[in-house]
Image 1: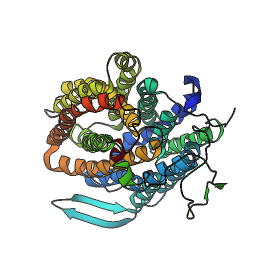
Image 2: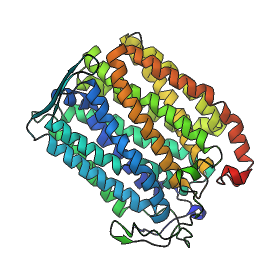
Image 3: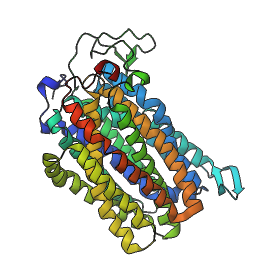
Image 4: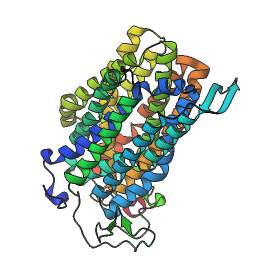
Length: 453
């Protein structure tokens, strides 16, 4: 085993990426376990759909603060160290979540409102909120993992490898709900699943620490010396990663990189629609359909299993024939149809929607990640991916809160709003046709627009 840096000139073979795929899988496996019964846990502790949405929004709200910093640090200090920091944060967050399950259900605030509904904020809920906040503030692992993959992958292979990383992510969502159904069916209730999530996060931390090499070679750093951060995880700052000192790592600098602002807007809209769905559908399943956690778990596992298939052989074949912009356009219109199928409330249409979700999201999302990484270039991967995660966090905050509120007010009509947003993405995506073709004829793609022009 070696921890020697590997750079773009010495691209990693597929087998060397197994640790990265594994920690991606582990991250979603832990969350997939909790996702299945979280809405039932929240209501059991006195919350309602709004509290469920707020709890879901806590993670992205704190991630909004943490992801840009972690993305910047990954450019300066290395992807591996920041991935390790994120994994340790996740591990501690699950430990806090586990402690919350043993606390007395002590009422703190009770609310009875026509607008907000009826709920009681209890001590376990407050502690769970704290755990999700810690996980969020250290939750730059997705953006840093995306930057890591871009570091070690040629542009020709990037779409396929993002698809494989999405498969790893979806496998967590396949097995997570299944494990939750098995583990949560004991007399210990939620304790065993949360303990499993904690142990899984411990395994992820060890994998980063022991098996994952650094992704980029050390070069002379040109960025000004940072006096506020002297160490990361107890290690002195090493003069690594050539980074410009003209402000390009700031948010203003990121928005001067050609085509990146438009991709960040699409990123925001996609996450906004998804997170309306991620709050509204579990609430609909629990209240409107009277599903059990096992039934919800089966449904989520079915979507993830089909999406893993799409992002494997299907996406591999399609990416050989079609550019990313074509897959984004096609995937977004198919995904939009999925939301429309949920509105009538027919079980047949609800299960048919899984096919549209799997294909639409399966071909669209890896293509969005691939195209964003191409527009970012080689110098600013961590910073751009951190900004993308911030856009996702903003959309998640708005979407998760709105999803609970919209479902309370409009029921399945909330899916119409999510569908309208995805169809807006479909219309806007036609601009990518010219953008990608122009980018392919401009070698210095990472240059800010002001310089490129």
